[in-house]
Amino acid sequence: KMKLAVLTSGGDSAGMNAVVRAVVKTAIIKGCETWIVREGYEGLVRGNDAGHHRSHNIGAEKGANGSRSRTPTPEAVETESFTQTLRYGDGDLLRDGTGDHPSGRSLKGRYIVRVGWDDVRGWFSEGGTLIGTARSMAFRTREGRLTATHNMIKEGIDALVVCGGDGSLTGADVFRAEWPGLVSELLSTGKITQEQARNHAHLKIVGLVGSIDNDMSMTDLTIGAPTALHRICESIDNINSTAYSHSRAFVLEVMGRHCGWLALMAGVSSGADFIFIPESPPDADHWADEMCNMIQSHRDIGKRKTIVIVAEGAIDSKLQPIHADHVKDILSERLGLDTRVTTLGHTQRGGRPCATDRTLPTLQGVEAVEALLESTPDTPSYMIGVRENKITRVPLMEAVKLTREVAQAISERDFEKAMSLRDPEFRE
Ligand code: F6P
Image 1 (tube, rainbow, N blue to C red):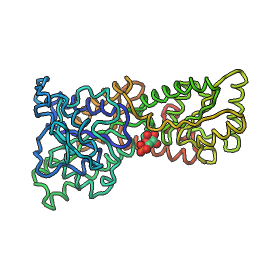
Image 2 (image 1 turned 135 degrees about the vertical axis):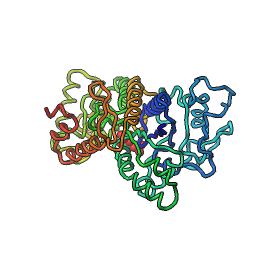
Image 3 (image 1 turned 180 degrees about the vertical axis):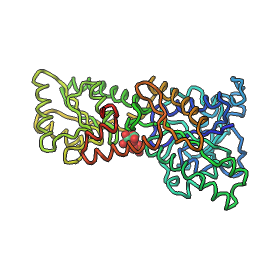
Image 4 (image 1 turned 135 degrees about the horizontal axis):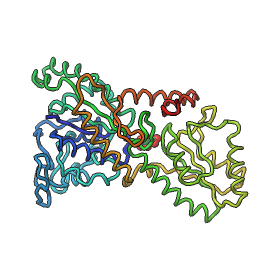
């Protein structure tokens, strides 16, 4: 019986809860035992306090409202009690929160938690990640990964689903490669038994890409990007009405790290006047003229409002960052436009997932469990992607490597190469 744990890592994105839900439910249907890891890799390193009974399951207890399990499968335990515990109680363990739920249940000191069917009920409509995420420093060290291995073996876990960006997925593959060595070390230092070492000789890993940036190679869409784009469009709609009323210009800075997908798609969806993205740096000596000419021509034909979108990673041809404030000064000084800057910030990451960020993680979550069940020591770790509307399995390290090469090509201003690496069809 496969014992599978799922964690979310790196920046949160809409759809991560849908991943957890789909993975847990699919795994249960396929006869696996299911666990969640709280606070990303940090939770693996922290593990569970000594003395905690390893099969203890919050959901297995009677809920606060006294209700019984509604789903008659062995793993289908209790109602939304687990969700409630996370919501009202102790989501802040990394910051030393009080850690207690009004009902008396607590996850304090417990990072690797057994979950059942009802624990993830309704999760696909929730924003962010209910199981928490973190950028763990401890897991970056071998020592941290050794502790993580021990904690997983103590709970009997032999398969891991990681949902995060390229950094998180690289961490997953490094962990899998190191696993046999870590297990031997735990055995030789007497921390685990021969039998535990034998039962955990290999770790199965699969990655799902959760990121609003849509910056991963070998997949068309990352989980959370459609919702973030939707949030940006809503914000631009809001700004449009006030911009129109005052005949103002607005410069909007949007997220995306080194990827301009959000900025470009938001510009296309909202009829922006000018867009700056990292993949297409404008001529350092002429972009201001070019932008002013374009915007003036729009004003000349009677446009009352101006929207300029600046991706947070935007650069010019001399690799100098393009800042929203600088763009604003140019529009004010050269065109005399009453200009404001709006940095959308983390509003882009929050809120309810749109439909695509429910269907995509659900289909990919099913595929992730199937990939784990078919995994052997010889198969690579897979990343679950989507290509032309079909769910795909690609070697995780290949996708991560390509993503890094794209970033490298952009920093070397080889945009043709960057585009061909990001999109194989561009190459053909
Ligand atoms: O990778 C997702 C992302 O939201 C980027 O678009 C942004 O640059 C970064 O994370 C912000 O990170 P933080 O939440 O740590 O401020």
